Image (cartoon, rainbow, N blue to C red; front, side, top):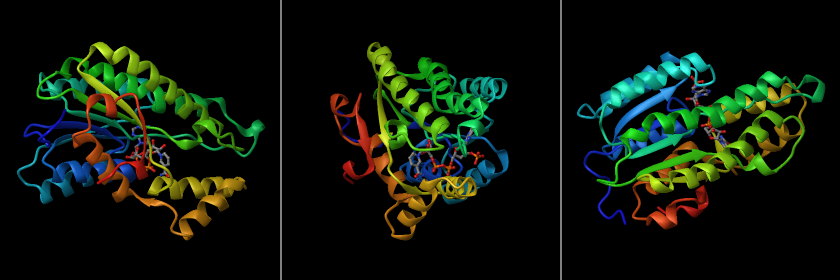
Amino acid sequence: MRTELPLPCSISVITGASSGIGWALAQQLAHRGHTLYLLARREAPLLECLETLQKRYPRGSFHALPGDLIDPQQRHDVMTRLKTAMGTSSVSAIIHCAGAGMPAANLADWNPDDLSDALQINTVAPLALINTLLPCMTPLPAPCRIILVGAGIDKRVQPGTGSYGVSKMAMRRLFEQLHDELASQPAEIALMQPGLVDTPGLRQHIRTARSMKLPHADYLQAQLDAGQAFSADTVGARLATLLDATTSQNAFSGREWRTAEISM
Ligand SMILES: NC(=O)c1ccc[n+]([C@@H]2O[C@H](COP(=O)([O-])OP(=O)(O)OC[C@H]3O[C@@H](n4cnc5c(N)ncnc54)[C@H](OP(=O)(O)O)[C@@H]3O)[C@@H](O)[C@H]2O)c1
């Protein structure tokens, strides 16, 4: 059981840390005293986030590692920098929030490269991240908690959502595989299904889907207009609670979590 968290030396690695759910989580964990390694694609917004945290928490320890996790060479470079920066430190939490999946207007317009990119970011990147950090997973002070952020669309087939949905389904399978593979490691892994969350990423997705005349664009916009989406802050706070909670390993690990199920 984790009883007195946050631990004084909690070190967490977050992908997608410059926007939406990942940024909300980064702020929550910074407030709880975690040392943070922040990963995102574009350097400028990530450095802005870093600066914000450094100003808010001058005694905190925050590190930015920009790079495109879809691109194999950039991903390799980011992982090498992360490994060097982490050294022999113990990692407390790894949260893979970065995600993508370009919609397509119809089958003829579905570019196989979009599926390839989505698989890179939604499956290959988290595997690379976990493999890189394996030496940093230690039983003490507590096993590393890993969360993959999935999406409910993985099991719901909808027009135009193939790259995103197929790759998130592959992520679900990766999560199941990793749960098995990590059994002998000081690590626990869970899948997070955040539900609909009002983020820059969601709003951009709605604009793109609308330009392709995909029916789910209007549905998602109506949900946002009706206040039916979670805020990123809500999801970030619930994720932080889940990571630092006294939940026993058996209760946390191997489980699919939904935002509404995580009590504060
Ligand atoms: N929002 C929702 O309703 C919702 C629902 C279900 C699941 N999710 C999942 O939740 C996660 C976060 O979504 P969000 O809505 O918070 O997204 P968001 O606001 O678009 O933020 C995405 C973050 O991921 C980074 N990222 C994207 N592509 C990347 C790449 N190739 N390499 C490295 N970093 C990359 C972005 O950096 P740049 O901005 O520099 O690209 C950004 O920091 C995703 O996995 C998404 O699938 C979201």
